[in-house]
Image (cartoon, rainbow, N blue to C red):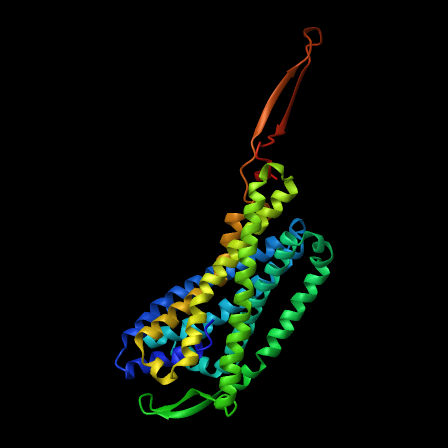
Length: 367
Protein backbone atom coordinates (compact mmCIF):
# COMPACT_ATOMS: atom_id res chain seq x y z
CA UNK A 1 0.00 0.00 0.00
CA UNK A 2 1.38 3.36 -0.86
CA UNK A 3 2.26 5.48 2.12
CA UNK A 4 0.47 8.46 0.58
CA UNK A 5 -2.72 6.50 0.27
CA UNK A 6 -4.31 8.79 2.85
CA UNK A 7 -3.95 11.78 0.62
CA UNK A 8 -5.38 10.15 -2.49
CA UNK A 9 -8.99 10.27 -1.30
CA UNK A 10 -8.45 13.89 -0.35
CA UNK A 11 -6.86 14.48 -3.72
CA UNK A 12 -10.01 13.15 -5.38
CA UNK A 13 -11.88 16.12 -3.94
CA UNK A 14 -9.03 18.50 -4.70
CA UNK A 15 -8.92 17.33 -8.33
CA UNK A 16 -12.22 19.03 -8.98
CA UNK A 17 -10.71 22.23 -7.63
CA UNK A 18 -7.65 21.67 -9.87
CA UNK A 19 -9.90 21.30 -12.90
CA UNK A 20 -9.63 17.53 -13.27
CA UNK A 21 -12.90 15.94 -12.12
CA UNK A 22 -12.26 12.99 -14.45
CA UNK A 23 -9.79 11.60 -11.90
CA UNK A 24 -12.68 11.12 -9.49
CA UNK A 25 -14.39 8.99 -12.13
CA UNK A 26 -11.14 7.11 -12.75
CA UNK A 27 -10.82 6.30 -9.04
CA UNK A 28 -14.48 5.30 -8.86
CA UNK A 29 -14.04 2.64 -11.54
CA UNK A 30 -10.62 1.51 -10.25
CA UNK A 31 -11.44 1.45 -6.54
CA UNK A 32 -15.19 1.81 -6.13
CA UNK A 33 -15.88 -1.04 -8.56
CA UNK A 34 -12.61 -2.86 -9.27
CA UNK A 35 -11.09 -2.89 -5.79
CA UNK A 36 -14.39 -3.81 -4.12
CA UNK A 37 -14.89 -6.81 -6.42
CA UNK A 38 -11.29 -7.95 -5.99
CA UNK A 39 -11.49 -7.49 -2.21
CA UNK A 40 -14.66 -9.59 -1.90
CA UNK A 41 -13.12 -12.38 -3.97
CA UNK A 42 -9.81 -12.10 -2.10
CA UNK A 43 -11.37 -12.31 1.36
CA UNK A 44 -13.25 -15.47 0.37
CA UNK A 45 -10.12 -16.91 -1.26
CA UNK A 46 -7.97 -16.25 1.81
CA UNK A 47 -10.55 -17.88 4.08
CA UNK A 48 -10.50 -20.96 1.85
CA UNK A 49 -6.69 -20.91 1.86
CA UNK A 50 -6.61 -20.88 5.66
CA UNK A 51 -9.05 -23.78 5.84
CA UNK A 52 -6.96 -25.89 3.44
CA UNK A 53 -3.54 -24.91 4.82
CA UNK A 54 -4.64 -25.73 8.37
CA UNK A 55 -5.44 -29.33 7.35
CA UNK A 56 -3.23 -31.85 9.16
CA UNK A 57 -1.78 -33.08 5.85
CA UNK A 58 -0.52 -29.56 5.07
CA UNK A 59 0.88 -28.92 8.52
CA UNK A 60 4.47 -27.75 8.15
CA UNK A 61 6.47 -24.58 8.73
CA UNK A 62 5.69 -23.15 5.28
CA UNK A 63 1.95 -23.61 5.74
CA UNK A 64 2.09 -21.62 8.99
CA UNK A 65 3.71 -18.73 7.14
CA UNK A 66 1.11 -18.92 4.38
CA UNK A 67 -1.74 -18.95 6.94
CA UNK A 68 -0.25 -15.87 8.59
CA UNK A 69 0.07 -14.22 5.17
CA UNK A 70 -3.59 -15.00 4.39
CA UNK A 71 -4.71 -13.37 7.67
CA UNK A 72 -2.76 -10.20 6.93
CA UNK A 73 -4.11 -10.17 3.37
CA UNK A 74 -7.69 -10.44 4.61
CA UNK A 75 -7.22 -7.53 7.01
CA UNK A 76 -5.56 -5.48 4.27
CA UNK A 77 -8.35 -6.20 1.80
CA UNK A 78 -11.07 -5.36 4.31
CA UNK A 79 -9.55 -2.06 5.32
CA UNK A 80 -8.53 -1.12 1.78
CA UNK A 81 -12.19 -1.54 0.86
CA UNK A 82 -13.31 0.57 3.81
CA UNK A 83 -10.54 3.08 3.37
CA UNK A 84 -10.22 3.44 -0.41
CA UNK A 85 -13.04 1.81 -2.33
CA UNK A 86 -16.25 2.79 -0.56
CA UNK A 87 -15.53 6.54 -0.16
CA UNK A 88 -15.04 6.94 -3.93
CA UNK A 89 -18.61 5.75 -4.54
CA UNK A 90 -19.95 8.84 -2.79
CA UNK A 91 -17.57 11.19 -4.61
CA UNK A 92 -18.74 9.92 -8.00
CA UNK A 93 -22.34 8.81 -7.48
CA UNK A 94 -23.45 10.72 -4.34
CA UNK A 95 -24.25 7.38 -2.70
CA UNK A 96 -23.29 6.27 0.83
CA UNK A 97 -23.13 9.85 2.10
CA UNK A 98 -23.58 8.73 5.70
CA UNK A 99 -20.73 6.25 5.39
CA UNK A 100 -18.49 8.81 3.67
CA UNK A 101 -18.64 11.16 6.64
CA UNK A 102 -18.53 8.32 9.18
CA UNK A 103 -15.39 7.01 7.47
CA UNK A 104 -13.64 10.29 8.26
CA UNK A 105 -14.09 9.54 11.96
CA UNK A 106 -12.68 6.05 11.40
CA UNK A 107 -9.74 7.21 9.31
CA UNK A 108 -7.20 7.85 12.12
CA UNK A 109 -7.69 4.24 13.29
CA UNK A 110 -8.41 2.37 10.05
CA UNK A 111 -5.33 3.67 8.26
CA UNK A 112 -2.78 2.45 10.87
CA UNK A 113 -4.40 -1.00 11.05
CA UNK A 114 -4.13 -1.31 7.27
CA UNK A 115 -0.44 -0.38 7.50
CA UNK A 116 0.11 -2.95 10.27
CA UNK A 117 -1.33 -5.59 7.95
CA UNK A 118 0.85 -4.33 5.10
CA UNK A 119 3.97 -4.55 7.27
CA UNK A 120 3.01 -8.08 8.33
CA UNK A 121 2.49 -9.06 4.70
CA UNK A 122 5.90 -7.77 3.61
CA UNK A 123 7.88 -9.43 6.38
CA UNK A 124 5.92 -12.69 6.36
CA UNK A 125 6.74 -12.97 2.65
CA UNK A 126 10.37 -12.23 3.49
CA UNK A 127 10.36 -14.82 6.29
CA UNK A 128 9.13 -17.75 4.21
CA UNK A 129 11.50 -16.73 1.41
CA UNK A 130 14.44 -16.94 3.81
CA UNK A 131 13.19 -20.29 5.10
CA UNK A 132 12.81 -21.67 1.59
CA UNK A 133 16.29 -20.44 0.69
CA UNK A 134 17.75 -22.29 3.71
CA UNK A 135 15.78 -25.45 2.90
CA UNK A 136 16.87 -25.47 -0.75
CA UNK A 137 20.32 -23.91 -0.77
CA UNK A 138 21.54 -24.76 2.76
CA UNK A 139 19.93 -28.16 3.42
CA UNK A 140 22.41 -29.08 6.17
CA UNK A 141 21.08 -26.21 8.29
CA UNK A 142 17.42 -26.81 7.47
CA UNK A 143 16.76 -29.44 10.16
CA UNK A 144 17.65 -27.03 12.96
CA UNK A 145 16.37 -23.85 11.34
CA UNK A 146 13.16 -24.70 9.46
CA UNK A 147 11.13 -26.02 12.39
CA UNK A 148 7.51 -25.32 13.26
CA UNK A 149 8.41 -24.00 16.73
CA UNK A 150 10.84 -21.51 15.23
CA UNK A 151 8.28 -20.54 12.59
CA UNK A 152 5.67 -19.78 15.26
CA UNK A 153 8.16 -17.58 17.12
CA UNK A 154 9.02 -15.70 13.93
CA UNK A 155 5.31 -15.13 13.19
CA UNK A 156 4.76 -13.71 16.68
CA UNK A 157 7.83 -11.46 16.38
CA UNK A 158 6.62 -10.14 13.01
CA UNK A 159 3.17 -9.41 14.46
CA UNK A 160 4.55 -7.52 17.48
CA UNK A 161 7.14 -5.65 15.40
CA UNK A 162 4.46 -4.63 12.87
CA UNK A 163 2.36 -3.10 15.64
CA UNK A 164 5.30 -1.37 17.34
CA UNK A 165 6.64 0.08 14.09
CA UNK A 166 3.22 1.53 13.16
CA UNK A 167 2.31 3.01 16.56
CA UNK A 168 3.26 6.52 15.32
CA UNK A 169 0.63 6.11 12.60
CA UNK A 170 -2.07 6.33 15.27
CA UNK A 171 -0.68 9.77 16.15
CA UNK A 172 -0.49 11.05 12.59
CA UNK A 173 -4.09 12.13 11.88
CA UNK A 174 -7.08 13.46 13.76
CA UNK A 175 -10.70 14.16 12.84
CA UNK A 176 -12.10 17.63 13.42
CA UNK A 177 -15.32 19.32 12.35
CA UNK A 178 -15.68 22.44 10.19
CA UNK A 179 -18.62 24.39 8.81
CA UNK A 180 -19.36 23.66 5.15
CA UNK A 181 -21.55 26.09 3.19
CA UNK A 182 -22.35 23.47 0.56
CA UNK A 183 -23.92 21.10 3.10
CA UNK A 184 -25.04 23.96 5.33
CA UNK A 185 -23.77 22.12 8.40
CA UNK A 186 -20.61 21.04 10.13
CA UNK A 187 -18.80 18.11 8.53
CA UNK A 188 -15.86 15.97 9.73
CA UNK A 189 -12.49 16.58 8.13
CA UNK A 190 -9.13 14.80 8.45
CA UNK A 191 -6.13 16.81 9.55
CA UNK A 192 -2.55 16.20 10.62
CA UNK A 193 -1.89 16.20 14.34
CA UNK A 194 0.97 18.22 15.82
CA UNK A 195 3.21 15.16 15.54
CA UNK A 196 2.01 14.30 12.05
CA UNK A 197 2.72 17.81 10.76
CA UNK A 198 6.20 18.01 12.29
CA UNK A 199 8.57 18.33 9.33
CA UNK A 200 11.50 16.48 10.90
CA UNK A 201 9.25 13.65 12.05
CA UNK A 202 7.76 13.38 8.56
CA UNK A 203 11.16 13.20 6.94
CA UNK A 204 12.70 10.73 9.38
CA UNK A 205 9.77 8.38 9.98
CA UNK A 206 7.30 8.81 7.15
CA UNK A 207 9.88 9.03 4.36
CA UNK A 208 13.33 7.65 5.13
CA UNK A 209 12.40 5.00 7.71
CA UNK A 210 9.37 3.91 5.71
CA UNK A 211 11.27 3.59 2.45
CA UNK A 212 14.13 1.67 4.06
CA UNK A 213 12.13 -0.62 6.36
CA UNK A 214 9.08 -1.23 4.19
CA UNK A 215 10.61 -1.28 0.72
CA UNK A 216 14.35 -1.04 0.12
CA UNK A 217 15.50 -3.58 2.74
CA UNK A 218 12.85 -6.30 2.21
CA UNK A 219 12.73 -5.81 -1.57
CA UNK A 220 16.51 -6.07 -1.90
CA UNK A 221 16.66 -9.28 0.16
CA UNK A 222 13.65 -10.75 -1.65
CA UNK A 223 15.14 -10.02 -5.05
CA UNK A 224 18.49 -11.63 -4.22
CA UNK A 225 16.96 -14.71 -2.59
CA UNK A 226 14.48 -15.05 -5.42
CA UNK A 227 17.31 -15.17 -7.97
CA UNK A 228 19.15 -17.79 -5.90
CA UNK A 229 16.00 -19.91 -5.58
CA UNK A 230 15.37 -19.79 -9.33
CA UNK A 231 18.94 -20.94 -9.96
CA UNK A 232 18.51 -23.77 -7.44
CA UNK A 233 15.29 -24.94 -9.10
CA UNK A 234 16.94 -24.96 -12.52
CA UNK A 235 19.76 -27.13 -11.18
CA UNK A 236 17.27 -29.46 -9.53
CA UNK A 237 15.28 -29.86 -12.74
CA UNK A 238 18.47 -30.60 -14.65
CA UNK A 239 18.96 -33.54 -12.29
CA UNK A 240 15.31 -34.57 -12.36
CA UNK A 241 16.02 -38.20 -13.29
CA UNK A 242 18.10 -38.67 -10.15
CA UNK A 243 15.60 -37.03 -7.84
CA UNK A 244 13.50 -38.91 -5.31
CA UNK A 245 9.78 -38.21 -5.03
CA UNK A 246 10.32 -36.22 -1.84
CA UNK A 247 12.88 -34.00 -3.55
CA UNK A 248 10.49 -33.51 -6.46
CA UNK A 249 7.72 -32.38 -4.10
CA UNK A 250 10.15 -30.01 -2.39
CA UNK A 251 11.04 -28.50 -5.76
CA UNK A 252 7.36 -28.07 -6.65
CA UNK A 253 6.80 -26.21 -3.38
CA UNK A 254 9.77 -23.98 -4.13
CA UNK A 255 8.41 -23.21 -7.61
CA UNK A 256 5.04 -22.24 -6.13
CA UNK A 257 6.67 -19.92 -3.59
CA UNK A 258 8.88 -18.37 -6.28
CA UNK A 259 5.75 -17.47 -8.26
CA UNK A 260 4.13 -16.02 -5.11
CA UNK A 261 7.27 -13.96 -4.46
CA UNK A 262 7.47 -12.69 -8.05
CA UNK A 263 3.80 -11.69 -8.07
CA UNK A 264 4.39 -9.90 -4.76
CA UNK A 265 7.40 -8.02 -6.13
CA UNK A 266 5.61 -7.11 -9.36
CA UNK A 267 2.52 -5.80 -7.60
CA UNK A 268 4.46 -3.89 -4.93
CA UNK A 269 7.02 -2.28 -7.26
CA UNK A 270 4.68 0.53 -8.46
CA UNK A 271 3.93 1.39 -4.81
CA UNK A 272 7.68 1.63 -4.17
CA UNK A 273 8.08 4.05 -7.08
CA UNK A 274 5.03 5.98 -5.90
CA UNK A 275 6.50 6.43 -2.41
CA UNK A 276 9.86 7.56 -3.77
CA UNK A 277 8.13 10.20 -5.95
CA UNK A 278 6.00 11.28 -2.98
CA UNK A 279 9.15 11.67 -0.85
CA UNK A 280 10.99 13.76 -3.44
CA UNK A 281 8.38 16.16 -4.85
CA UNK A 282 6.04 18.67 -3.24
CA UNK A 283 2.85 17.01 -1.99
CA UNK A 284 0.53 19.84 -3.01
CA UNK A 285 1.86 19.82 -6.57
CA UNK A 286 1.42 16.05 -6.81
CA UNK A 287 -2.17 16.19 -5.58
CA UNK A 288 -3.08 18.34 -8.60
CA UNK A 289 -1.14 16.14 -11.02
CA UNK A 290 -3.50 13.90 -12.97
CA UNK A 291 -0.81 11.37 -14.03
CA UNK A 292 0.47 10.99 -10.48
CA UNK A 293 -2.97 10.49 -8.94
CA UNK A 294 -3.83 7.94 -11.63
CA UNK A 295 -0.51 6.15 -11.05
CA UNK A 296 -1.16 6.10 -7.29
CA UNK A 297 -4.63 4.72 -7.93
CA UNK A 298 -3.26 1.89 -10.06
CA UNK A 299 -0.41 1.13 -7.63
CA UNK A 300 -2.87 0.74 -4.76
CA UNK A 301 -5.16 -1.38 -6.92
CA UNK A 302 -2.21 -3.70 -7.59
CA UNK A 303 -1.65 -4.02 -3.83
CA UNK A 304 -5.28 -5.11 -3.48
CA UNK A 305 -4.82 -7.57 -6.35
CA UNK A 306 -1.70 -9.03 -4.73
CA UNK A 307 -3.54 -9.69 -1.47
CA UNK A 308 -6.35 -11.46 -3.35
CA UNK A 309 -4.48 -13.65 -5.86
CA UNK A 310 -2.60 -16.15 -3.68
CA UNK A 311 -5.50 -18.62 -3.45
CA UNK A 312 -5.52 -18.88 -7.27
CA UNK A 313 -1.75 -19.39 -7.32
CA UNK A 314 -1.97 -22.19 -4.75
CA UNK A 315 -4.69 -23.93 -6.77
CA UNK A 316 -2.79 -23.63 -10.05
CA UNK A 317 0.66 -24.59 -8.78
CA UNK A 318 0.12 -27.07 -5.95
CA UNK A 319 -1.44 -30.44 -6.70
CA UNK A 320 -1.52 -31.22 -2.98
CA UNK A 321 -3.39 -27.99 -2.23
CA UNK A 322 -5.92 -28.74 -4.98
CA UNK A 323 -6.46 -32.29 -3.73
CA UNK A 324 -7.04 -31.18 -0.13
CA UNK A 325 -9.29 -28.34 -1.28
CA UNK A 326 -11.49 -30.79 -3.19
CA UNK A 327 -11.47 -33.20 -0.28
CA UNK A 328 -12.21 -30.53 2.32
CA UNK A 329 -15.22 -29.20 0.46
CA UNK A 330 -16.43 -32.56 -0.89
CA UNK A 331 -15.96 -31.49 -4.50
CA UNK A 332 -15.35 -34.86 -6.05
CA UNK A 333 -16.46 -36.98 -8.92
CA UNK A 334 -19.57 -38.97 -8.34
CA UNK A 335 -18.80 -42.50 -7.30
CA UNK A 336 -20.20 -45.22 -9.50
CA UNK A 337 -21.11 -48.71 -8.57
CA UNK A 338 -20.09 -51.76 -10.51
CA UNK A 339 -22.05 -54.96 -10.16
CA UNK A 340 -20.03 -58.13 -10.39
CA UNK A 341 -21.82 -61.48 -10.73
CA UNK A 342 -19.92 -64.52 -9.58
CA UNK A 343 -21.35 -67.95 -10.21
CA UNK A 344 -20.18 -71.07 -8.50
CA UNK A 345 -19.81 -74.45 -10.11
CA UNK A 346 -23.02 -75.80 -11.73
CA UNK A 347 -23.58 -78.52 -9.16
CA UNK A 348 -24.08 -75.98 -6.39
CA UNK A 349 -26.41 -73.70 -8.42
CA UNK A 350 -25.30 -70.96 -6.10
CA UNK A 351 -25.52 -67.27 -7.09
CA UNK A 352 -23.57 -64.62 -5.30
CA UNK A 353 -23.72 -60.90 -6.08
CA UNK A 354 -22.04 -57.95 -4.53
CA UNK A 355 -21.27 -54.34 -5.36
CA UNK A 356 -18.24 -52.25 -4.70
CA UNK A 357 -17.27 -48.65 -5.23
CA UNK A 358 -14.86 -47.92 -7.97
CA UNK A 359 -11.25 -47.21 -7.30
CA UNK A 360 -10.24 -44.43 -9.63
CA UNK A 361 -6.95 -44.52 -11.39
CA UNK A 362 -6.59 -40.93 -10.29
CA UNK A 363 -7.25 -41.92 -6.72
CA UNK A 364 -6.37 -38.48 -5.40
CA UNK A 365 -9.55 -37.18 -7.05
CA UNK A 366 -11.69 -39.75 -5.31
CA UNK A 367 -10.32 -39.64 -1.76
